[in-house]
Every structure is written in C-alpha cells, then in structure tokens.
Length: 281
Image (tube, rainbow, N blue to C red):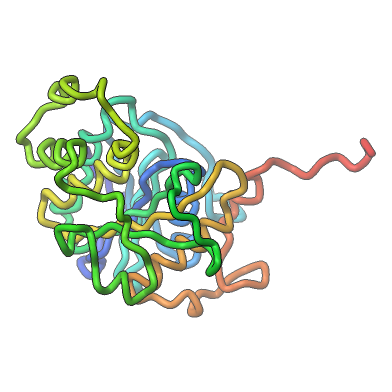
C-alpha cells in the first residue's frame, strides 16, 4: 500500500484517531464516513493505492461546485481541530484478499503514528438473534480493550457488546493467527467446508480489519449496526453520531445544511437518481 500526499498538503501529528469504514450490507459505514468528512469539513490530504482494492473514479463527492477533483477508491482526510484522520473507501476489495488489505491498512496506521482505530460497519438484519427496537436503532461494539471484546467506555455510552465475538472460536482464532503471521491463507481449506452459523461474523471485512489492527498493538473499536438493503441514510446518521460520542466530539458544533446539524454530502443528492418526470402522470 502506497500513501500519496496531495501537492502542498501534509499529515497532522495531532490526528491520532483514525476512522474508516468496513464495507458491508447497506454501505452504512461508508455513508457515515461521508457524513463525518462533510460535517467536520475535513480536507483531503492524499490517497492510498493498494493492489487489493478495485479501481474506480468519480466526481468530487462533497463540493457543490466541483473544481475538477476526482474521487478515488481510497482517500485520506484530516480534521486537525477534531484530531481525526478519516479514510473513505469507495470500491470493494478483490475477492479473497481482504486479510492482505487489512494488514496493509494496519501497517499504514502504525507508520502514521495512529493510536486509536474506529471501524464503522453494518450487519445483516436477518442474522439478528435478539431484536429490541424499544429504544430505536441499537449500536453494537467490539473492542480489544478486554479479551472478551468489552470496553467500559463503550458501555457507558450505551453501546452493546457484540456477544457473538469469541476469540477461541475457530475462525476468529484463524483470523488472529493470520494477522500475526502464524497461519497462511491456505490453512482455511482445512475447515472451510465445515463453516457454521457462528462463522458469519468473523467472515466479514470488519473482523479482518479488527484482527489486523489488534495484531499491531493498536487500540481498536468497531461500531456496528444491524440493517437491511435499501435507504440506509437514517442508519448512517446513527452510526456517525455514535462515532462522535466515542471520540468525544459533539455533532452539535457542526454547522449543518438543510436545516440540521449535519452537513449533507453533495453526492447524496443523486443517491436514488433524479426525481421522476411529473409530465408522465
């Protein structure tokens, strides 16, 4: 993985917390990072080039009057006033290369002196075992603060520990061994035909990223929400709010647009295409 700085830009040493998405159902993590970048007015300082990420290119996602800047697969943004670095991922990882990509990200984070990694992602609503919507959307977390994934700070914020995490379960253990260099990709063939329901969670991108950052001795917190495919913008607001609470940042300080506190990314105007031609009705 190569990090390319934009001309005239430089990384800020005070930005010790890194927030990034792990691609999953509904793209909630990516949408939440979009919100955080737009609302904190983070500036793009460069981009990452990794052979394990599929190439893509698009228009500037945040500026109403684009200056000709292109959006690339992996972009790095920084908000010095909030001590945050944010990475936005806009295209998927090559099949079978998720662990290698996660290890490259971990190497990058260590080289840049990051102290706390926050991973935003989503889980399939159909896999939710204990559904409780009495208090609205519930945020789940996974942390390496304790062996069982628990974290006192997350508990105080009202997040619920992902109880499906079991570091002794075969696939979680395999991921950990892979991240630490004690196993190879070929070793999974010995039990891939016996994958069970409990293997769903460690098979997701966030799990590979969690294991890789943890193996480098970094503090890692995953924030997760259950969702279905469809309009996941409300989920993104909830996940972005949870990320703000975790890092001690108040979304009330944002100078939002469209009558709210959040700055809605310009690219969201075309998420579902243009409105229908009313002359048809």
